[in-house]
Amino acid sequence: MTETIEPAAGAPAAEPRATTRTTRAAHRRPPRAITVPVLAALALAPLGGHRTDLRRSRPQPPRAAARRALPAPRVRHVFLVVLENESFDRTFGPTSPAPYLARTLTAQGALLRQYYGIGHASLDNYIALVSGQAPNEATQADCRTYAEFRPARPGLDADGQAVGTGCVYPARVRTVVDQLEAHHLTWRGYMEDLGNDPARERAACGHPPLGGTDPTNRAEPGDQYATKHDPFYYFHSIIDDTARCASHVVNLSALRRDLMRVSTTPNFAFISPNLCDDGHDAPCVDHAVGGLAQVDRFLREWVPRITESPAFRADGMLVITFDEGLESSACCGERPLRGQAHPPGVNGPGGGRVGAVVLSPFVAPGTISDRPYNHYALLRWVEDLFGLDHLGFAGARGLATPGPDIITGRHATRGTGSTTR
Image 1 (cartoon, rainbow, N blue to C red):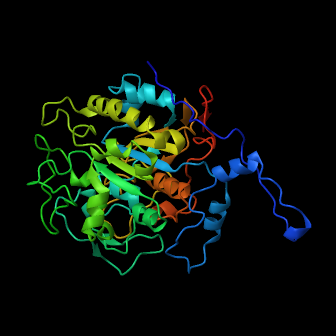
Image 2 (image 1 turned 135 degrees about the vertical axis):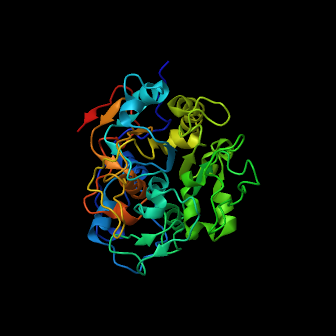
């Protein structure tokens, strides 16, 4: 049976309207009552009206000021599930091994048919999703040795890129979660199987030793966690504070408890299944089927938990996508990092067409978008929703993000989906 997203209770009944301010002295006219449309406009305003900006002393560029002035949907909780290594045609085609993802969930929300990964192999895509950093020779090889990043030049270039090669970025390279904390917003990375085998990786900030071999390159029975699918362990800005790292990067099991209340649900939740449930392995080390069929089983369990949670029903958005496809095409004017021996896709300009599904009370069921997006565009979209600056290639000039083609700006109703090109 196809499931549908029900509008959350108490959804605003009217679209926000522009209001004007008077310059007359307050004593000349008694204050007027705030009308319902004004309240609706306030409810749909972007987050962070009063926020601490780490770069407040710098003048804001015109495009940032314009971005913050536009009305935005009231999305306060973003959930991102990243799966593994599939092409759009196989995942969403007529004979898909994942009918729950390909049919049921696309009927409930939006299907982005022209969504692309940004590189090969896995790790560079995960890093791009949280920092906007482009693939380098080490991240393209999934950093089997957990090595320090070696800069080819000091600082960041004009595109916000750390030029060089290596795995663990210096503290000056920020991530979206550093931005969120600076704006008094919350986040967590939920990693399936993290810490299941303490001899393999610790549960508390259990990254490999710097300079050492990553012991999670292969799954083992009972622990199929992979560091290369956990982007937060590749930034000194996160791992250098062990207590902060341990409290924010946790086992997936913690999500069940966190979803119970709005107050315990993070504003940004990054969800990484294990090497079996994300479709990477087929068959799996524990003899499970793996592949897209396993993906479907994982989503059938976890998507209802997320979409039925109080935070999602009030103002949530769930994005489900894949790190990379099976070829190396690209979109959106993707550019390589300077000084690298290979393009981002090793044999081509990008990570291939993978597709994405978006569920939200603000997304009309059955929506289809054929506008091109990639991982940098998704990061930029998340930053825009929370009123943050753009990191790395998420700040590329002209990079489009999902907008009215996906988000309606109000609680959507059944049967209002559309196709956008």
